[in-house]
Length: 529
Image 1: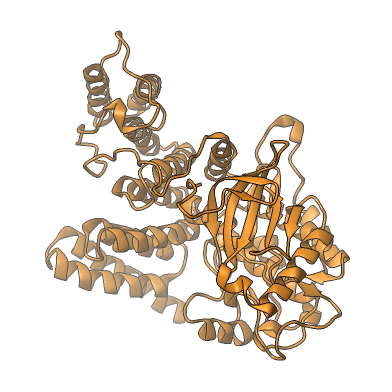
Image 2: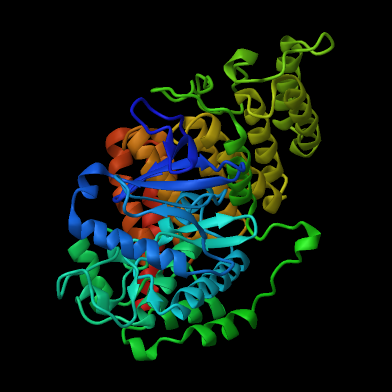
């Protein structure tokens, strides 16, 4: 959340605004507080839209739709001012990221959380449909992940199942990659259209990719109508459920009660009394960060808070140069008389030295070093995060891959929050997370994650940066190991050309890329024979 900017309203209705939560196509969203101290999300319509009579009519429909819908998995309306200037609506504040952000930061959800997500979304759609409404824009950005389950939000284009439309005949309303074929063609839509969107959302949650790809909206809509969805990263009963939702014909899609029966046959809700989270560690960390954020005191300021200082270099086992200045992180504890900054550096270097020869011993040593750094410098200090990264790396080296994967995921989330999502150290932790996910045998999931790392490294560091090339190599390798021989061969061929140009034709990485191309090209030909 950002502080309020100059020119932002201080109050809307009876709510005091405390910060900015975001913005969308319709308006800006603020964190508000009621006179009784309740946190709410206040959506305020943009002035240029507030002056359009047709838009105000649509907004009034949104308010009426949102007020009519209840249920455990929607965000209830607290108050609204559809006739005010500008119009606004306030809903209960849901402390959690949306699904799009969660997948971008923490990667695709494991299978069990996807089942739980499916159950919550089906219940939400049942609540919406029971009021005689359709959502018509179910997508990852409209699904918030709270500690106790998902919440469906934003009824900006919801409409009655049977009633007059506020849009012109044949007008396409929705988001290209998540709308049904009948929506894409501007035809009549019913509850089955929301079921199709549900399938697309679940496919995205499980794979990290939209099932009909990306690109220009018209191209995506063409694929929605004519092509089969890409569900390579999903298998078993979950694949079958998603594929059924994505049937081209509305009549062939399961109804919501049928879906709930299928889901409950494969998933039991977690026991709330146990305190166990229904989400993976990376998502839980994001939720916890949102839970604590609204309690901070935000003042009127045109600039966001100063970010913490970042390390000067990318992680490297050989590098022990990292910042230990407590001033680089807000509210970090000062060093104690018993543990100096120099002593922390000495312990870190000693653990690195041990790890070069005895990684099993280094795992325990780094656990102690992490505890020392956390106590002296704070959990969010870049030096502490570096120690946790090295602890995860040594766990991977000794074969404790599940723990390494989990710890790398946690460090990646924390580094994105502290250093920024494009910082080299953040990208390095994401790369290692995907790498060890592949080492644990989950090749296709690893390939999906590594593709995102490669894209982000190309954008942040440059397409020819050696780290970008390494992520591309690992993506191709994981695809090949996962049985996608033809695609792996094609990616290795492209990588070999680029590596020869950047690193030289005789560089070991170029030679490895050439070998990868030959290996998986041979396997793809064997399949054809």
